[in-house]
Picture (cartoon, rainbow, N blue to C red):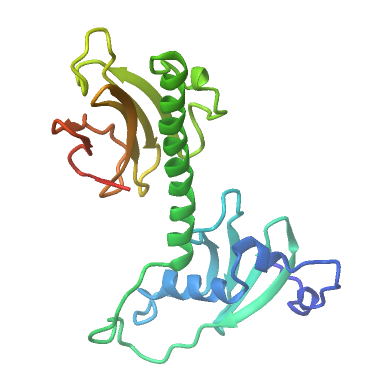
Length: 250
C-alpha cells in the first residue's frame, strides 16, 4: 500500500484542524493505545503484527469514522485520514519489551473513561425525558383531571423513539392509589434502551389522597443493570409508589 509522507499531516495551518484529533476526541495517542490493545494478544507470539488495521474506539461520538492504520515491519503506526487515504500521519511505534502477556499482579483494569462518558450522556437523555413526562402528566391531571394517553397529548416535544431509546406513556388502571370512584390509576412513562450496555428508565405519576385534597406525585426509577427489556409494574404500599424489581429510585 502506498502511504503519503507522515510529515505532510504534521504541517497544519491555523484554520486547518487536526483530523485525527477530532476523529477520536482525545488526540492521536488514542490511536496508539487502541492499536496496542488490539494487538496485545499477539505481541508475545510469533504472529505478525505488521499489516493494515481498523480501529473502533470505545465511546467515540456517533458518526465518528473508523480509522485505518498501517503497522510496518518496524512497528511504526501510521493512521490514514478516513476521508482522504492520501493523507497520513505517523502516530507512534509499537516496541516489544517482554514476552509476558499477562497483566501485572494486582493491576487495576479500568473501563475506558471515554466510553463511560458516552454511556452516561446517552442515559442522561432518557433520564431527562422520563422526568419531563412525569411532570407533564402531573400538570395534565391538574388541568384536565385525567392522565394523558399519548406523548403527543402531553405536548412536550418528546419523540416516541430516538437513536438509543424508545419512549411510551400509558395509563394502568389496575393500580389504584386513591380509593375514589371514577379516579384513574397511575400513569407509566418509560424510556427503554434499544441498545445493549444502556440502562433503562421508568417513571410513575400517581395520586395521593391527603385529607380533603387530591395531590399528584411522581417517582423516577433506573434499572440497576443495562437492559433492553420493559420494566415490571411498581408496588404501592398504601402511601407511595415503589420502583419495580431490579430498578432503583432516582
